[in-house]
Amino acid sequence: MTDYLQNELDKIDAKIAEAERLLPELGLVAEEEINNLKDLRFKLSKKPEADNEIFNSVILEVRPGVGGEEAKIWSGDLLRMYLRFGENEGWKSGMLDDGVVKLRGKAVWEKLKYETGVHRVQRVPETEAQGRIHTSTASVVVLPEIAENLIEIREDDLGWEFTRGGGHGGQNVNKVATAVRLTHKPTGIVVSCRQERFQEQNRKIALELLRSQLWEINEEQKRSKIQDSRSKIGRSMRAEKIRTYNYPQNRVTDHRIGKSWHKLDWIIDGELEDVIASLSPQ
Image 1 (cartoon, rainbow, N blue to C red):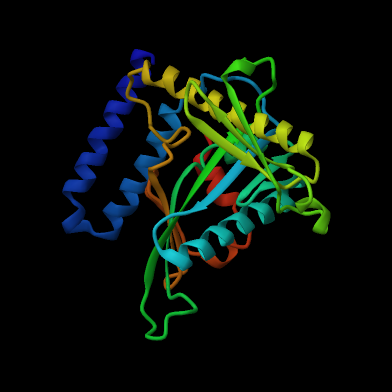
Image 2 (cartoon, rainbow, N blue to C red):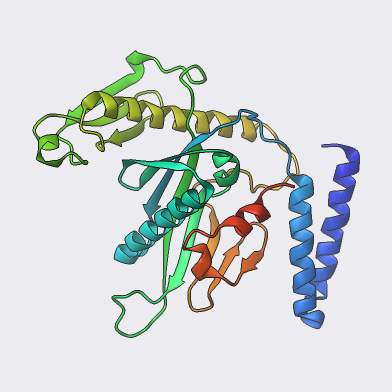
């Protein structure tokens, strides 16, 4: 980071601190100024990612978090949101496993790489008789599909298990051991795939999933060695709460940039353009 850029960031930090000091007095005016300053700071501090490869295919995984049955419903809603967004972008999609899809198309990685993290929902579940608002979460992980030549995987490091699958293909899929469970012995990573009706196809997908996760580990190790003052938004940690979807107020808030959109109904239906644009460096 250049001295000039660091000085500019320091000036913005000072302005944010001053606006926060005036928050009790100026209220919404100061709050809006703080949000604008944080947005500006993010755009200035964002450096090019360590990986400059252009990825046109990603693996997106959505898993339910806390909240029981409502969390499962919420994870399904999020997955639908991304699939609808993908349709709007003209991307191709395919199911790899329960809650795991591959999206392929122009700029798919550039647009989705900031979606990793915990997505929280606040709403009244359909099963709630008293009309009380519940809070549930789901975790989203977005990883690029990695070419074989970028990540070396030793066959000796792999543990394969095969069982009868339950994916598409009708009754025949359950007659042979098509489902795959793959363990990477050095890291303990376990991936599975059962969607395809042939074992070899599921083996291929499992290796794709493993390569993406190994790539993520390598990238995290690189970033851990870089200590600077840039924004942490990047590819967020999986356990980081990044966004809240408040249904009663029709509001979506991204906590990393302190910005809200009062059109949750549109966003959850796949209209993510404004959110994506706000997170991407100009």
